[in-house]
Length: 458
Image 1 (tube, helix red, strand yellow):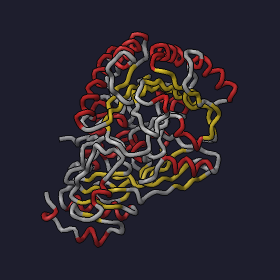
Image 2 (cartoon, rainbow, N blue to C red; image 1 turned 135 degrees about the vertical axis):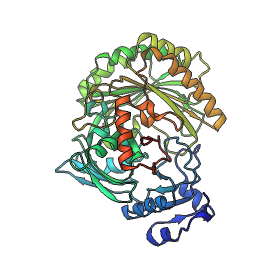
Image 3 (spheres, rainbow, N blue to C red; image 1 turned 180 degrees about the vertical axis):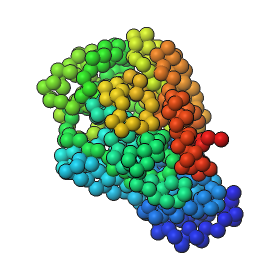
Image 4 (cartoon, one colour; image 1 turned 60 degrees about the horizontal axis):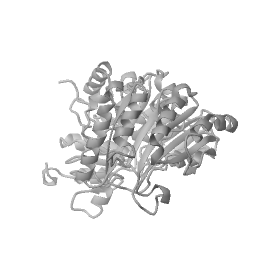
């Protein structure tokens, strides 16, 4: 369908934010996300300023038989939202903290740094991700794996109290486990398949600081560090959240000189306990090899991004990963063989993240997050043009395949690329239930663009 096939005037009359067509000035900028590999080409883009704008956009899409896509920050590498009504949410960014209830109400375009900074004023903290520039909503709806508190408190989706969502009928609903139990269950873990979420109410925790940061080692110590890490996490307390990154970073001014153009091993730590206990816990890893840099210390929670040091400038990248039942000695050997200092690996960031703890326990309010049996997440990023990205992702696929004996057979939804099958994130029973809920709330599959699409039942 082209723009000549529909009349955009009703949308212009009913939306307070910008409504842009492909020939309009500002269209490309409005459609741009953090991941420059994804270039969206919707039929029309709506810069939503409120739930009313979202309702108008959804109704317009349904009336014109167009799919709906949503763009907050655009970190995840989905397929382009071609021919859709693309709703951008950056203008809907606000946080309301209820210190007494220890909750925050967060609107659709809010970033994690905004929530962390707002909550910190009341001595509270959310289950944030590793980057402050990532949008809250998509992260939470995909499960929400917090590197600071995930093992301690579970998935971010486990701590959602209520959801405001515009469904395919163009109506706003406030959804809870009492009002709409099936929809509430499905949205938390099923991501954007069931409507456009305009706000969520999330739990906060009485945390003001953590003992953590990073220890960087030269690539020659990859095997020693990984084997030590495997043993270290075997009996780690739930308060200890950690991961290992094998980094191959380019020689850019923003990259520390010791990490430019060479393999570096990065231990990331967040411990929610005393500094004395934290020092004792981290000591075995500090003793494995000389540190190029050690930033592990008691740190204000507002500086949570200093653990992973994720990039803040947009770039073109793809990603691939898998979930493991354990990090075995043989598995470590395979990682070293395929991604260590003697390999030809070009994966820019290979992330090996410890799960388990509260991430492995059922949620108090059940939801669709269906990867609780995993104990390790392995994920890699490839940066560059499409040809380079695909070549490097082939290396990542080979690595995950080599870890097949320990695979759970699933992937974590927020770490999947657009061409990964959505079924890979769920078991059969959960996926069947997701399709049933989809059939009830979006039978014509309006919300099929810019996500891992769950199809309604035929």
